[in-house]
Structure formats: C-alpha cells, structure tokens
Length: 254
Image (cartoon, rainbow, N blue to C red):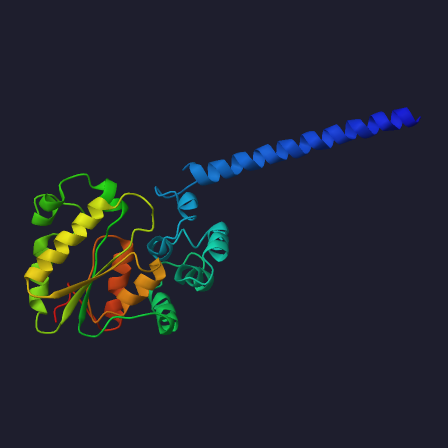
C-alpha cells in the first residue's frame, strides 16, 4: 500500500513539475514577445522595450505610454519620483499630452535644482547616439548646412537667432547629455565647433555636458529666460515649458 501511495505521490509531483515548467516557459515566451518584438504594439515604436529606458519626451507625448499599467510600474520601480514617474502617476488614462500638468510638476521640483541666470542663453544640443552613430556624415558639412539632419542645428541657426537677442544675453550655455558609455568623439567635435563658432560671435560660452540627469537638465533648461531648442520630443517639451513661463524661444515674435 505504501509503495502504491509513493508511486502516486511521485506521479503527482512529476505532473506538477511539468505544469510549473510549462507555465514558466509560457511566461518567458510571453515577456519575450512583449519586450523584444512589435507583435502586440499599436505604435511603430516599441513602447514595451523603450519603457526600460528613461524617455521623458515619449512619456509625455505618447498617450499610449500612460495606457499601460506595466509602464507605470516600471517607472515606479526604476525611476521613482522622477518627472516621468510623477507625471504617469497623476495623468488620467487615455489622456493626451498634458502640458499644464508637466508645467505644474516642474514648478514643484525646481526648488531642488540649479537654474540658469536670467541673462543666460541656454542652448540644448542633441548629442550622444544621434551624432555619434545615427548621423554618419561630415560634422563640418552638417554645421555649414550642406547636409540636413533633423536633430542637429547648423551655424546659421545660431548666428541668425543670437543676433535677435544680442543685447539681452551675457553668456551662452550649451547643455547636452550622453547617458551611455560609448565613444563620444564625434559629439565632442560637434560641441567644440559650435562653442568656437559662438565665441567668434563675441560671446562667452560655457558647457554643461553630461553633468546631470535627464530631469536635472530638463528643469535647468525649462527655467531659461532665453532658450534655443534642438530636434526631438525632449527638446520640444522644454521649449513649451519655457514659453509657458513667458521665456523667449526662437519661434517667438518678441
């Protein structure tokens, strides 16, 4: 009798083990599909995979970010109390970009962060991945305007727009971040060329490159009195925040 019970026990144990392993395999397969393919994504950008990186611009601009519970959970765990986490916690489901909410969050958090002087011109330059490997052309030709790249601005952008506010600013601060450990020699060349060009226009130039988190840089730039943006959602969000605080951006008429 004991032998029969023992055999039944072992059989049940094997069955439960098979069930467990099958469920584990299905779970792994599910998360693989969720995180590393676009099969269940509505948007061309793979939100599931991107959610594991801090993407403030996407969180605000893409409403399908705040439709997904797991995105909020990821930001709550890995990016607790950041601007993006605070926004995801407060924004209503299926709500489009809520710039008033973002502005409110910036005002709440800014007291703990450094901000520029009122006579500083703050310039966001998009560096890192976009310059290091997405754009493979010649940096000087890009700055001369011979090649077009949506994320980067050329010499004319800086000279023509600085001319409009030349009597209102005392220095120019270039702000950008890498946030990776790759080779940034191309970005450094791009920064140096822009810095030298603006100095030749007669302005003192300081750089704030990779000196803060995405939130620190965002709040710093959002408090600019004078702000020039680059390409990308992150930079455009900063421009919106500057305008909401009655600052000057390059598409203003004043």
